[in-house]
Length: 223
Length: 230
Image (cartoon, rainbow over all chains, first blue to last red; front, side):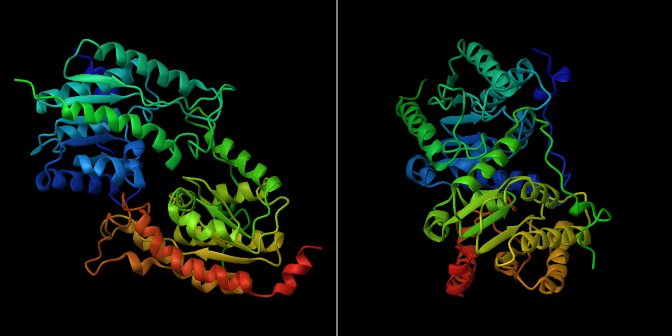
């Protein structure tokens, strides 16, 4: 596919330092350093939903024992993750699993563009780490009540799930335990701002995710 | 001293526009207004993500829930947004003894003087609406891994607050900025995972002095407390 030039979601783009404190680049540089210092079996990469996971007790409980690194940055869209992974965040490491969770911050992009951006990342990971399996997490619903972003995210998931079905080095994993209730609402007990997860919300996401990662790690290596 | 009025853009009440399309800001505001009808907080926390995130960590349950605290933090908020929320329902039906105000780091379009003026305007509003309450204003923390213009800006805001707030009588200023700066001027990701937002460790550094101060205020003047229940 050569749609990169016309798809901003699939064009590696660093985040501009519009605020003036260079925080995005500082975080990226720190992740590149971690690649030189550590030997992770699992790398998590994505946006704030990945980054915040690291701040809750559940990370130490479920993921630290699996030798995981967390390369989430709040606000990141697919094009930012694509840039980071093309610029050092997959170097010097050979994880068995890469967990990719991104797409909800691609404002202004269509579901098709976002899905293509995600697939571009999956391809990049496979090029750099041919022996790794990429687990692509479904983008969660957001907003207290039904709204266009929920539709967009659901469409992204459908497109990505279809595209991944033919690949052996990557798979789709739905981590939504049913956050949308029967009246269409999302509870602030699960997402305190109807986007970011509470500790309770992370519990519901991380337990099945942990089981899935473990089963991938326990698989005998191919070749 | 610059404070309110239409000369200071940081003191103009403004709601957040729903640009993303899922109405989350208004949903959160609406929920806070409802919490005012349901609850009788002794302590009200109001501000931006620095306030909001605090409630997600264990520290909140350990140190602040027991004080009967409500958390009206909203990520991304500027002084303008907090001012709007407080004028549009988030102070209705409640009589907290203390309000903790922490906002200003997101005022990217405003100068340090304007930001400090906006914070003072909020403190003034709180004092007008809750004459018996103490207002604890938290200093803006340094941000960014290394020294940068926003650190200077936030430090200037703090300097101005230190000099302007005493005129309000009911306002106290608590600044723990120095706790986060290492000797080489860097901030550790152990304290701020993205060099802005606090980790649980970072919040522990702030929580102890804040909790001590709140306990001190809450233990004061039981007569006033009985009077306010009339």
